[in-house]
Every structure is written in structure tokens, then in C-alpha cells.
Picture 1 (cartoon, rainbow, N blue to C red):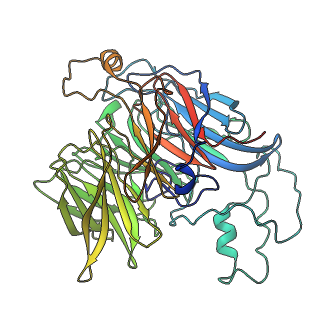
Picture 2 (picture 1 turned 180 degrees about the horizontal axis):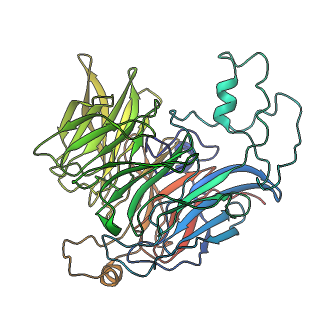
Picture 3 (picture 1 turned 120 degrees about the vertical axis):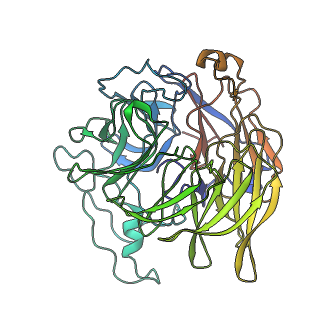
Length: 486
């Protein structure tokens, strides 16, 4: 649905109809297709991670779609079953996408997103048939095609037992894909054809380096980093009903690359590079509470998860520690552990729950993926080392799909030499490689070999419906999975 998969930025897909640990240990998982998109890289930025929509019903029939943002203000919709471009929209922008620097590249400043919910995601189960007769409907003029109702609304309407009266007909509900162009304008596009559903709204300063665009309850949130485009560092919220923008600003840098994480009660959490972990009110971004450290710098975006009736948050630090917090109105440090890895990639953690009820955390370093288990010790959560992956080149945030970790060795040269240009770094980088690992042991199950021919900087790994997607720097989108008949 959004960057990191859900509002908590877990990068965890609970279930999948084809990808399982058992099936990944057998032959069959392979490159399904690759599609070169019409997009020019800006500095090192190119394609965003794919946002997915399965079983969309529009005026063209059934579709499974992936939406990808491009660095030159493009949004692409791809039919993932047929490897076909469904539509392409160029967002108008008053700024040049070719200007900027490595830290402030300009162009499309945030990943695309679909409106989502703050609730912890429920497993998506396919099949089972309808519980009632099919219904047809005609869409309201100007609102796009009639689509399947949001599954969360249906689930929330069902009695706890799953029996009883069927939920009320929610009626036509247009589907949108949201994005931000380089001039800071918020664009809402129809899923069906990529046309603007409403006039663009001012959200961010031009050329801001925005991260983690997410839309919840008709409010768009994004973090702004590196003081790009005269945009102070912080979090911004756009009320889509009124057009009002709220700000929470900081002198410190924003930690990580996935932006703010949102708890089920709507509280917005963000971390800074100087050691602040901040809780903000939904919509207004008024400060609820803050944990501050004078000597520990956070390097990751927060990942939130449920544990023993509480919402916890995990963060990495520059000196190689994992910090565990109670994600409440007044964040409290619970535990921290030294990982012996003082080279965490400035990105985000992943989190998943194994079938035996163990909570896992995964984090990329400069050369591997490291995993920890969240355990209880005398009633207090503690962290225990889990496993370490094989050697990877600048891995990005891993995705966990139904017990399988998809880890991407990005191939990107990450150098402290600030005199190197984007072109020099690109020339010295190596092609990316996608790996499938056993989420319980880190054991390698499969890899893509030399299939991907470019490195990856922006974006990452996403997947569902038996397929996994990677967007490379040269503008090629790759789909891996199990072949199916068409």
C-alpha cells in the first residue's frame, strides 16, 4: 500500500498464495518479465518501490497492478500479469528535474502511495467464493471505475464469529494513487487511467527531499530531509479535505529513508539523527512526547509492531546498537543491544512474526542483513541475536513474504568521498542481485544471479500474489515469481 508495505513500515507480507518456504526450496522461482520504463535518472534516483493493487475491477476488466514513481516526475501503472504498461502520467512541475545534488536530487520527491489504514494489517486470504449474490454498479461521472470495497471496511463490519447479517453495501468507492511532484504539489490520480481526480494541492516546498509519503484518513504525511529546497527538516501533514498543511520541524536531520511510522491509534512517530524519538498527534502534528539522547544518533526510520498488548518501536544507532521503545504518547526506552555492526545502512528495519509467535527484527548493514529476536525476560522485552546473512553489497531494507526474506544486494557504491559525482558512483557500482532467504535461519534459498543489469539506489523490494518486484537505476522494472498460464 505504501513505503514499507504498511503504516508501521514493517515490510512484512503476512500471507501469499504461491510464495512459501517449502516451495522456494524447489525449482520454479525465476524471472517472469522485465519492462523498461520511460524515465531519466536524476542524480542517483530513478524508480520508487512498487505499490501494488490486486484484483482491481475497472472498465478494462480485472487487473493486478503495480504503481511506480519515476525521478523525472512520472507515474507508471503496470499490469503485472501481462507485463504491460497500463498507463503513464507525467506530473506537471514548475521545477527542473535535472538540477540538484546527491543529497538534494530534486525531481519526484516522494514515493507513490495508496490511501491506507493505520491499523495493523490482517492476513489477506484469496478464494472462498462470495457469501452473497454478485452486484453490479455504474460509476458516478468523474469518479472513475467502480472497484472492490476496501477489505478492511468489510472485515470491520463482520461480526467476530464471521456469521450473521452481511455488511452493508459500501457503494461505489473510487481508487486513487497519490504522489508528490518535484515542485511540492500533491497529486491524486485515478487508478483506472492516471488522470487527475482533483486539482493538485500545495504540500511541500519545491525540490524538497521528501521521504515516506503515506495517506491515512484523508491526511497525507511525509518527512523532509537534508534541508533541500528551502524545506526545513521535519514532518508535514496535508489535510486533503481543507488543504491545510501542518508542520513539525527540527534542527536535526531525519533518520532513515522511510519517513514517519503511524501507530494504530494514529500517533505519528519519527526519529532524528541527534537521538530524538518523537510522538506527534495525527493531523495536527502537535508534540505528544519525546525521548532524547545526547550521545546516540539514530540512523533508521522507526518500525512499529505489537508485542504483549503494547505497541513497540525499534531503531538503529550510528554506533551499532538496536534500541527498543514503548511507542506511547511519551516514548520510553525499554532495551538496547550492541550488534557489533557499526555500519547500519541509513534506511529502515523490517519486522515479522514467525508461526511460533516470535517477533523478529531485520536490519541492513553495509555488507549483510542481521536479524534479532524480541524475547521476554522477567516480563520485559529484550533482544537476542538471530542470524546474519551471506555477504551483500549495500543491501536495502529486506521484505518478508510468508516466511521468506527477500534481500536485495543493491550493488551501489556507498563512499564517504563527497567529491565523487553521481555519474562516477554509478559507474563504479555493480549490478543488483536479489536473494531469497529462510526467515528463520538466514539460509539462502535462491538468487537472481546476473539477471539484473544495473544497481539500485531509490526504491526497494516489494511483492505479493506470487511475484516480487525490483526497480533498477536504468529504469527497468523486474518481476520474479512462479510462472502462471495466461
